Image (cartoon, rainbow, N blue to C red; front, side):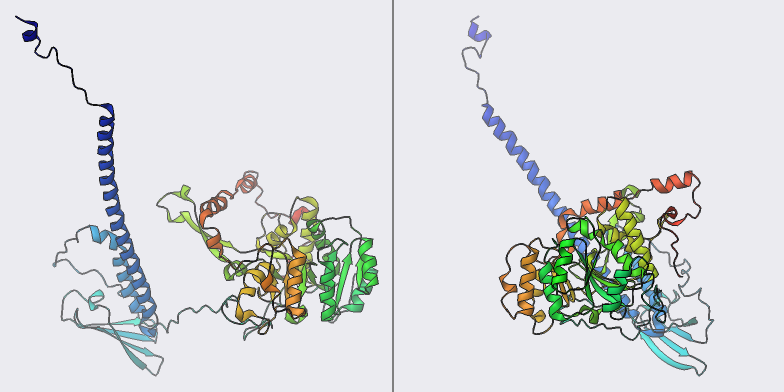
Length: 566
């Protein structure tokens, strides 16, 4: 037998599939599978989006119906009961879309009416009459001893409160509520498209808590002048209504001469400077500017600023209220005409819109509490800082407490004065940390203006031109080129240069004024985590373990007796 018969394939070259072709085939199969996966995922996401939109629209419809129902006076109690059933059903909208409806046996007794537990305990009653599932509900409301009655017809399904059997009538007396008026937010938005007024508007309800002044209006003033004779002499000579405008500065203060020129132009007679070096004292002497010399070696903006609280304490202790101002402020009107004077502290905000100036609630999420735990979502108050470079301090006991606390903290802690100032104003007392408890008012952001609002908002708004309104003061706090920004403001308002603000150069000149939400959109997770992780219970736990839950002395007695007038 031949070798060819024994090996029929002998002599032929074996054919192998090329490796590149194999790779192409595998890649094609993978791509086909991926396209099928993506197509299915896309279809599922589109379906989920449609369901979410439907649920959202249903919720909006329910909200609108709730608002409409609550405006119908005495019938609102019954309408809210109907709405409660409506909301309960709508709350399961997603589940009902996916699950079959449960079978209901007609022989089962009807569930009790949501109104059945209500008792007639008022002379003001309502009578509800229902006829059938297709008949509207008629509500008769009678008020007072004279039984003056009104009738309201509800369009909601009668089956929501009627007995299950048709063609029956039920009459039920329930307490009627007075008309529920929708809550109208009357808190004004100063950044709305309207020309603001800087004149204090107290409204009809202007009664406020009386301030606890250091020196009663009928007492001799100033007081506690021992060791402060030179201060009392200057204050007693220039103060108006026991108040002065004050700047604390050294000879290197930014924008000092422009600041002094604007004060002179307005003829603010109760203005003075606390000079903390000899060079500035001599300069003020030459310009005939009232001053009090109190030497201090502090240098730099923050270094000088940290001295303010101890200096203002001297003024408050002798009974003198103070409008404290940094020197990088251009004054366009006499500020004392625009101070409310109803709070211990009245200050300028670093905010740039309604939320940041007046505060807003930010929702935070702590998933460590459990994915399905509603308590994981809480709210925290956020607000832009009160600026420590322009604020009015009433000469009250609470203000004195604040000055003492801030002077102590700045002397013993590594703390920026503005941070400490805001913490003491906004945070509550805890353990031995006694806060001053100052009442506080924020100044109008379009009257006492920070430079971000001026250069990124006001100068781009025609309705805020100088032919329609003038700010009281502009603080160049946001910008590093302070003299340039102050010069532009002065030229526009005081030197009749209409083009000065349009010729803005340097930093911060765009009109891109974005909200905090827009600015933080890409960083909200970091902000959320920062808020959540900043909670520190160790000090409280230590106190509990050590049995130190007893009432503690404020500041461990280091600041003397601090008490509130309750």
